Amino acid sequence: MTGTSVVTVLHNSADDLAACLDAVPAEMELVVVDNGSSDGGAEIARAARPDAKVILSAENRGFGAGCNRGAREGAGEVMIFLNPDTRALPGALERLAAAAAAEPDSIFGPALQDARGRPRVNARRRSHVWHEVAELLPAARRWRPAGLSRDRPAGHRVYSDGGSVDYLQGACLAVARRTLEAVGGFDETFFIYSEEEDLCERIARRGGRCVYDPLACVRHIGETSSSKTGDFATFHLYRSRVMLYRKRGERSGRASAALLALAVRLTALWDAVPLGRAARGAAWRRAALAGLRSGLRADVRPPEPWCA
Image (cartoon, rainbow, N blue to C red; front, side):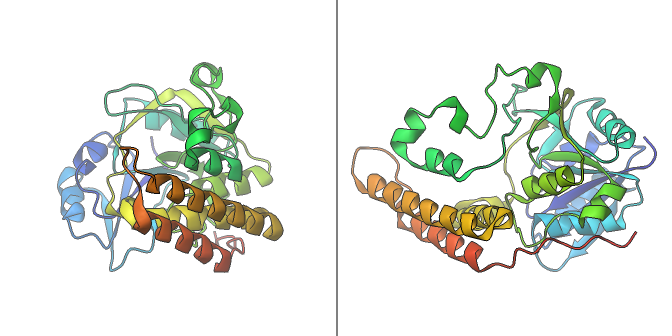
């Protein structure tokens, strides 16, 4: 579809890249931003799509920064942000692009599948600190009420009928350029995690919707970027959560950080009891607490609108 740019951001995520790019319709402009990779992702992109605009960055400045750079370089009136570990099924990107063009004040996301083509529950509720606590604490994980789950349950009608949700997962998002410019793009103070929810919230505050489309299907292989593994990812997960809650209110953000710190410490104590399970260890606890502290110090001013 003319007028659509697909932006893919890489950081040592070459494993599934060729399959991802092969599934992008030839008529869509493809912009690949390589955030300081060392695994040859840029060369794979050029081989898979010789027409792609490949942008090399000397350092990894994060997912949101990479998306913003790709969007600025792209020429489309509709921008689709597509993770390199995805594979769009036939017609999915065209459908999302058409929806974003028809309703340019809103943002759209597809139904996600796992590597075997099984549907994932990814129609998300607005994040709350109790989601993190329920995911951390062993007893809460076991007996968690449906209302404390971040995703709507598999039987929810949105998975069959589609419609508005609180926010969409960042594996694949479609939004009109004019709306992206008006809200200032992704907030680059989020390195990874929570940047898509923050973007959806800013679009919603302008009167737009976050729309889940079950007829646009994208297979999401998993988190293959080396940025999303180990203690580095743990640090940024908790940093981003605190930043998100602080953007909603300074006092509530600090209270959320204190509650999360308590839950992290309780989880670490539970993991220290030798019951034959895999413990996350002291390094995980240190990374999580360091992320919480960093999130409390971060500048959380909203990004400025881009110049058109």
